[in-house]
Length: 264
Image 1 (cartoon, rainbow, N blue to C red):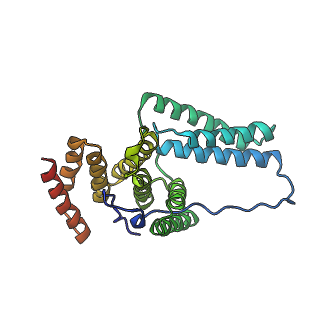
Image 2: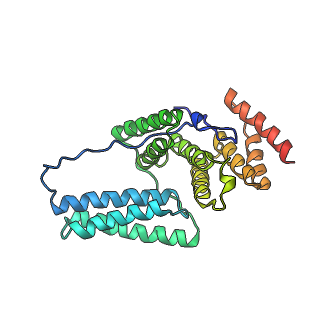
Image 3: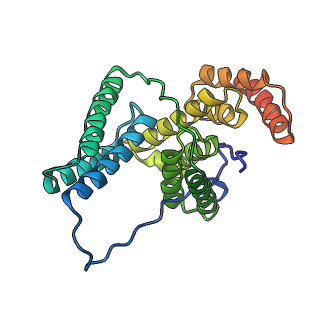
């Protein structure tokens, strides 16, 4: 799996390296209704997915996040009146976790994620498939499909660098795909949300691999495009401290030197 995709002002959606949405499970209108305990399990799993999303992008809560959480609560409130002890324990755990996430968001802090359990062979295969689907969707200029796939890949494997990095790339492309027409609008809120989500993805990659050159390069680009030259130079200088081992890395270092000259 390659993580060579980088975000530059010239990058166009055709060059996006990203991943696609999870398969949709089809239901039958004639299927028997699930028992309340199954409803509790399904709603609890949905709530966990929403919390995983909030955990990844702390401090950047949008309507999609809130609507997903509301849907999960609505499902529990409407359909569930009893649950097994195991599911009740999971629900209490989700409740406590939501409280912690809300506190972290309110303080503007991002706590470290707990150590991840090793992926099962099935999870690893699903993660790789989702990343590949996202890359294909990005090449086909289908950013919505790429975004959905990468988000699902990160939920499956929150520490997977390929998924995190390429999700950041797609967030950046979504934010900038209409950059030429954005000058005609006063409200940049939506674009800035996606820029912030891209930054969080790259920061998370650097938490795992501090010398990940593509992430350092893309962060420098994000800050440079927003006229924060000091922050951009900080990331560019970090790039120059790394000893390159591949042609791609040597190319990134050469570009970093040029960008530093332009910002000086």
